[in-house]
Length: 197
Image: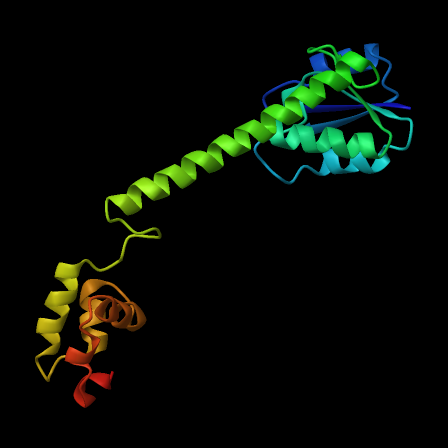
């Protein structure tokens, strides 16, 4: 059975062009979706994939109608191949039933792996460079070192509580305590009077 999948990004777009091309390609059933390609949840695509059986062929008008990224596309085609389901893209003239079509997807797979390796390599290089400049990974602290020192000065007043100081800086008591700890000033203000709310 030849099954088609069509997707348009917004309610304004018309899927007639895709639907007509899929019918002309011999699709006996066409699943249509009106959702942006960046969304993970695509119920019609999931229904289409559940319908496909051994020996069937999935046909799309264009590759970008099917997957959100090259990596997603390669994974989906490998999944179809493992289920003995063929794949055709009309615009790109790709057919995994042919040797040329299989070669294209092996190249796509290699490119997706290469892209993944490049991203990983750049991320690691960036982290090494940041560490060399004295920066640590993770989020920037909510309270700056200057804010923490101001908080310590405020907490020197026995009338002011940690809750009041935290509220003044727009943070929770937990964040205030963590900031004091980070700057090595937790013991300086950890007096019995300050442990009250």
